Every structure is written in structure tokens, then in C-alpha cells.
Image (cartoon, rainbow, N blue to C red; front, side, top):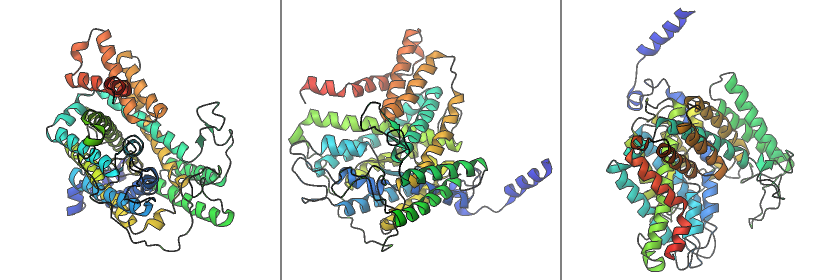
Length: 499
């Protein structure tokens, strides 16, 4: 039985390696060009929802002067969608080429909501002012990376907490998957925080698409079929298109954004488009004012807003690259991924680019783990994802065919794969086990990676002090814990300062 394996290994070792293979270290990391392309496509289809969702978040809110993003008294959804895809495509390619890591970027969910609802709507503040704060935050983070500070903070985190971050994100993205698919929902009665489907029942054709896609992915993965996740997404999409053509299900909300159809599709209706190509409008590029908000909200308020965005951006990326690197088997014994500084530099540039293009801060996406779960191990996958986004600026109708319900099974499956790392935590050592536990559970419970990381950091420092081991805590962990305490108490601090 051992001879065929030896022969296969010998063939693998002696096969010709091209320039692309050498540059991205494809063979070195045990992958192939085909696997990287497939993994990149899986990541693209798993996170392509942002092309539709980002415009709905930042494009439908009027700023402090009553204008919509892009100007005018009506939403500019098409313009925002095209620019969202453009920036995501360029940054994902940049990550692949520079960091050679299977991590894609796009407009950050959560961060875009903060910009839309907490900054742009302030009296007198324009969208250009709000995006200027995003650019400023990105520039500060970039300086922290170039000086080595951000990487130093990352490396100061104990390995157990890094593992907990990865596991927590696994739980988080699995929760995102079931919620986005409508498999789990907030009940109308609000008697419980969440419930299964509608009133405890799995009603509607879209739920069937999710369940079928999930079962296809699980069965194929169990049988070790290559491309299992991508096959599941395609299968779900085809099934969804057929169902919509026959049953005319429709979306959950109407044109006014009113929730009228609980058993409909969550975001987009999976119909075959009349045209495969649409001309993009990139008119948002450069519509920002770096310091325009100072005169309208004051220097102190501006600082607090930038701080809140910065801290979330700072630690979200740390958790994401650990989780993706762990799933890919690319972390060293200290839990650090290769090319950490390059990853952080590109991610910081993403914040600047997102603000400068007026589509909100771009950040590394945990959905990249879906492509890694399907075999991606190198930056070539990120390049493929980026090309997918660039094509989507023209092929938006094709991307719009893939509903949430067909893409989200990938998140559930990858969540399972990431949670498997939980065995790397010493659960009998309460000093690290309790902070690790809080890190893991608070990510899905608060719907925030940053909140989970912050709770773990603060608890870890408190416990080390309580057991007389304060000297063992890295100075940067002390600093991070103090900053997180300030982050959690941001509203009381604002009230105290009167801003």
C-alpha cells in the first residue's frame, strides 16, 4: 500500500514548476493551479452578496444635509454597486500579489453601518465628510503597520487566544450563514432572541434551497469530492432559478424596503437576467473630504468616531487572518500567518481606498475561509476572487442570480471546519480557557468579532493579575485591554465629554 503513495510523492516533487507556481508557492503549499482557481471562485460567490448589500446599507441613507451618497435626492444604487465591486477587485488582487495569502477584501459589514447610521447622519455632516473620516482612520492604521506596531500587537497575543479567535469566527460565520438564509430568524413576537425559520417551522422555497445546498456540500465533503462547496453553490443557484421561474416567490421586501413576504428570497430574486452585461458607473471615486467634519462636529467628536472605527478595523483583521490561516494550515507554532506585515499593509490600504472611493472601509473577509475550505492555499485564489469582482462591475446581472440561500451553506460548512480547532485549547487551565470561551461565544452572541476579541483580552489580563502572574502579560496586551475598556465604554465617555 505504501509504494503507490511514494511514487505519487516522487512525481509531485519532480513535476515542472512554472513561474506562477513559484511566485505563489502553489506546489510548496500542497495545492494546484486548478484548486486555487476553484477556491477563488468559491470565495467570490460566497462574498459577492456585498455588491448588492453594501449599496442597500450606505446608499439608502440620507446624510446630515439630506443628500444620498453620490449626490441627489434619490439613491444611486447602481453607482455604489459598481464601485463596491471595483474596489474589492483591486484590493483582493493586491492582497494575492503582495501578501500571497488566500484572503479577499471588500466593504466591511458593520463598519459600513457605523458610517451610514452613526456618522453620515450627524447634523451638517455630508457623505464626503463621513468618508473622509474613513480615509483618516485607514491612514492611521497604515502608519501603525509600517512602524511595526500593529504586527507587534498581533504577535503579543497568546496562542490560546488566537485559537479561540479562529473558533469564535467559525461559530460567527456559521451563525451568519443560517441567519442570512432565513433558517434562523428573529421571531415576530420577540419572545425569544431567535427561532427556527418562521414560528419554529421551515416555511418557504428559499429555505429548501438552503437545506439542499447544505446537504449537497456536507455529503460531497464527507465523500471528499473536490470542489464540494462550489458545486453546492451552483446546485443551489440552479435550483433557486428554477423555483423562482415556476413559483414566482419574490423577495421578502418590496421596492420601498417594507417587509411584506416572509417566505421570499432574503435579498435578491434568482431570475435569469435579460442582459448579461451592464455598463458600470464609477462616479463615486474621489468623493471624500478628509477633515471636512471638524467644523461640523468638533475635534473631540471626530477623534472618538475615528477611534471607534479604527479599533474595530484593527482587531477584526487580526481575527480574520488567524482564522483563514488556521483553516489553510499556514500558521506557525506561535499562531502567526506568513507575510503578516504584507497582509496588514494591504488591509490598511483597503480602509483608505474604501473611503477614497466612497464605498466605506474595505477589510479582509472571513468568507475567504470558504475558498480555503475548498482547497485554496495561496494568493492566486485572491487574484481569482479579485478578477471575479472586476468582471462583476460589468456582469452584475449574473452575480445577482446567486441568492443568499444558495451561497450561505458554504459559511455553515466552513464554520464547522474552523470550530474543529477548539481541541487546541487547554480547557483545564482556567486562566486561558475562560478568556477563550468568552472570545468564542461573544462573537456570535454580539454579532461582532471585535466584541469577542475585546472580552477575551480584558478577561485574560484580569485573570493573570488575579492569579499573581501580571508580569507575564505582554505590555501590548495591557495596552490592548485598556483600549478595549475604552471602546466598550465609548458612549458613557462621549456623554461625559458632552459630545
